Length: 574
Image (cartoon, rainbow, N blue to C red; front, side):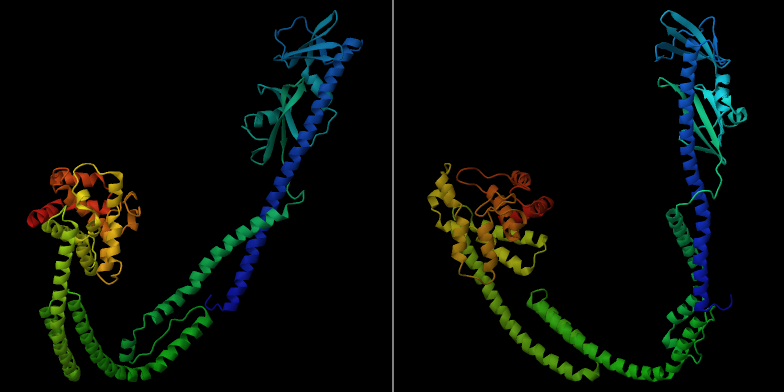
């Protein structure tokens, strides 16, 4: 097999497929013929045994009638002096004769009694004579023997009995080497089977028509398996050298190839078509080597220019990134200046124009940054002062200014634990301090009342989140959009039983869930007109017990995991 063209491989594959189908078809069809013959033979034997059984029982009953009513007695029935058995197996009537069947003795005599009015006899049936009289008239095309129900030999082929009686058979047909054995209940008298009839038959092949569909189905399955195995081996044989060449091409290093004067060489395969393909590919690569060398020289120059451009772009990006970080407060002005100088110093002399442009831009931005910082500081100072004033006005009956500032500080602490960004943290800080803005509308007589509130008073207090939102409804800009969410929903509960809207779980803004726990903690450790202050530990336990009901379990876990830090923040703020 030095050379195998694709045409030869196709032809061989076709022949293998045909042979792998027809050879199993011949073998399988012969076995199926045998199986069909066994089934049909069994059905014929069963029918024959049933007919013989009916004939023998009928002859037995006729013999009883003849014995009683005729002087000519059957030679296989004789009189017994006494009945050696006491209990009959069955009783039945043959016309007006009562017959009682007993058992078989060790000489193969069947004892039975007949009674007709005053006529009574104990009789014996010589089974061997009886069976011989009837079976001698039959020409059976299978071997047989008959036993009693204890498997003792009664009649038939003694040699077959000795050979096959020990065969265990739990199905209708059993196979012992090439012989099939079946057993049938035999000599049924009044629904009592006195004997077992064993048939022995050996079928011949190519006698009956076959089931072509089964033969074809099994042959196709075997053919498929053989074809797959053949394909596996022929494929591995063919692909051995092919894969070697494929790896040569796959592992081509163009840098080493261009540096070397040697051409690519392929490994000959057993398939001429593969040889032509690889040889053509190798020739094409060898042809383009020279143009590639010139292209590499040009590429080096281009790469150098690209590197300069990349460095310039990187310097611009670093400048813009540092400026962005400064604007968002992630770095200070000094760090921004160092980052700018570091990026400019890395530029080569070819980028001198860019250096000058970036320096001018940096100087202009520095001036604007200083002006912007002054504006930002002034804005934050004003917002902080405004939130303190509004918060104190709304909480004047419950919290001091220090406690309001403590709520804001703890809110930012929790927000950082939840990885909230700076924009949300600022809104959270101001919103937490004025979260009870709506209480401005609630009379002090209700807020400071020491007795239990009436239902109408409680309903009025429950309006304060909506009243607070009304005050902020015309202010849409940051941070009042975040403040508004806190004001209106800080009394919502995790299980949906809060107010004013009955929100639950993630539907409650994260800022409101934070403020809800902090507001509860500060309220518990603060003295109220109607109760003394709780200890810090008792307040923590109350919050822990409300996890999953009033509070977000995730935020409760932050409380429980940071008790020491929270306590220090509270102590230092006092």
